[in-house]
Length: 402
Image: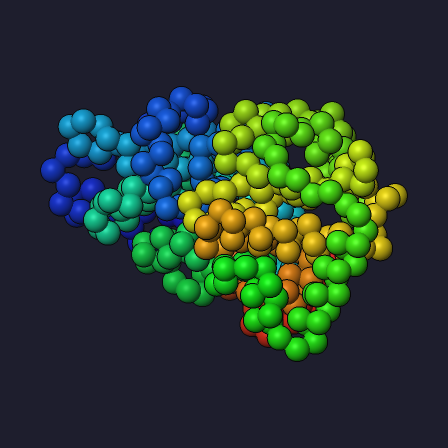
């Protein structure tokens, strides 16, 4: 039974792509089951959130509950595509709870949940690890086969699929398969600062006017507070980072996360990605009071997590200086081209030079109609898209907190 919305190429015969050798799809239980050099070829020039180090950390954090579909091609069975397929779990990648039911449209839960989550289950930047060296027709056939395999349940049954928080590359990959524009729905936005200047002073001066004066004032007050700012690898500061990041999560309502669990996760992340990590540590005397964890991948700095000791900070613009100004400066030092600041805190980020990169989702079910065909869902989507197009950070923050 086809999925809805129908992706025309999902069941296209491989012969149509003029392949001399059949593509095959196999399944492995861990990204570590794929040879590192093989997988590295697929992730060159792609987001950090499809990279092996990140997938290993997510796999650990989820306790498994993931399989990897691997597409191989030709007589030598070269790896040309990998699709992670995650089981559904609570949170921002839960299609029904986070997107469908909150729209107040009527959706039958059993048609949409549980849904398999494809591409990514963390990071808010989904694209697909397909070999960039493939010609367009072959690349489309590879992604088609992987999605088709992901949608197969026990026997002849089909399971709902969802790809959430698609970045522009991921959206284009699905669009190339024939997915219509009106099948995508908006899931949020990533904030990106493009590095277009050589120094932090030039970056601030370019914003001009009142904002430039305010940012300079924030810098002066922060510098006068007597803090020490240092850069380290994640493995050097797992314990303190776990404590500070847990405090931030607790401040914003996540009281379930424990320092122990976060330390275990960060230890695994350090094991997998320490070579790419850049941790900015803010200290007041000998006490750590702030931290921001970043990863450099390709030409981009990805800001992953931040944390603060809220009992000791709050009057010296610590957030702006640590999470925005210092990460922009770090990207300049590393000759990178962009800083991905992620979702949330849109007012702070947009007013300091970030642009919005819209994130989108696609939902496919064997029995349910496309969510975008539901009037209430579509109305909610129109409002969200208009909000992002206006780029009013305060308006987006208010909506984000509901």
